[in-house]
Length: 122
Image 1 (spheres, helix red, strand yellow):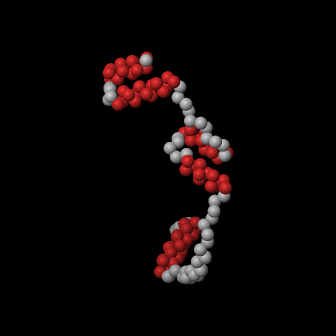
Image 2 (image 1 turned 90 degrees about the vertical axis):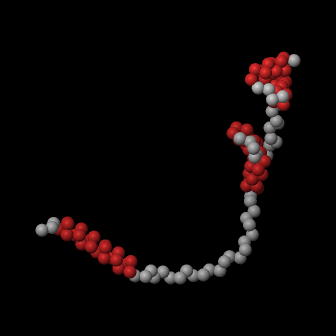
Image 3 (image 1 turned 90 degrees about the horizontal axis):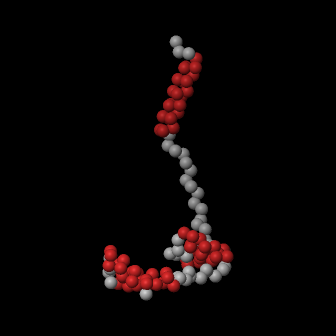
């Protein structure tokens, strides 16, 4: 003989499966959605001044990455002028020029090293 708890559990499972079978055979009685008229063409929302500034700054910051972009965006959103372009020191400028000349001549390895050394010295 089954215990009372087992009998109740069996009855619950049986009734649940019967309800599922009945529900599956009954067509869904969902009412047709009421047709609401489409809202009149609403004008596009104009962005706030801050949103417009953000869009403009974001567009002008293209190509910048990392800390440079953060600094630029911060200054731009505050309405400040962007920081001036970083000036190269004379040694950096000389290195840049010598490097460009070595690239034009397609120098590699020891030849490039010797050329760069000579170029940077004078």
